[in-house]
Amino acid sequence: MKITRSPTIQSLILAAGLTIGLGFVSPVSAQVRSYIVDSNGKGLTDLGTLGGRASAAQGINDAGRVVGGSEYTVSGLSHAFITGPNGVGLTDLGDLGGGVSNAYGINDAGQVVGDCYTGARAWHAFITGPNGIGMTDIGTYSSAALAAGAH
Image (cartoon, rainbow, N blue to C red; front, top):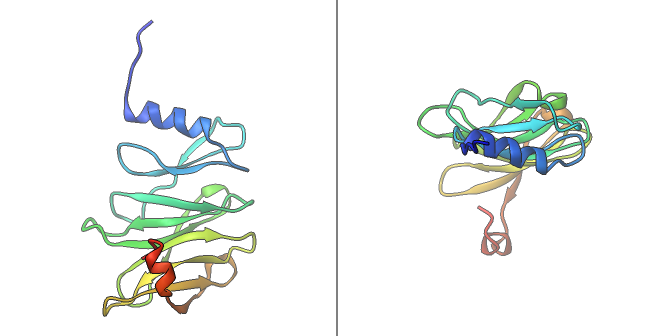
């Protein structure tokens, strides 16, 4: 029996072993891409990117809508994204004017939370409306959040 080691095979093994709810999301591959695995652990879907080389999934809700950050240029700038149900279709959530955003969580109504660089060395938290529509600035981080490692 020949044993083959590759980042892709390791990613499949990791993805199959760590299912959560409807699926699993993780930035696991040599291409730094995110995948969702169906609840049976058989179907593996590459979430894709917003045009850059990488994506990193951060959260998933019960409908399988995934959120995270994806490069939208090859220079490495990243925007928050949301997918449709079951991880299908990546939608750019934009930013608050500084060119960079990340999404970290999503509830079952599709409201997304994350952060954005707003320029002038300031990171602000945001929340969207249902289905990821409309980004609302909810202010800067507290000093306690910054000390805990949030940016």
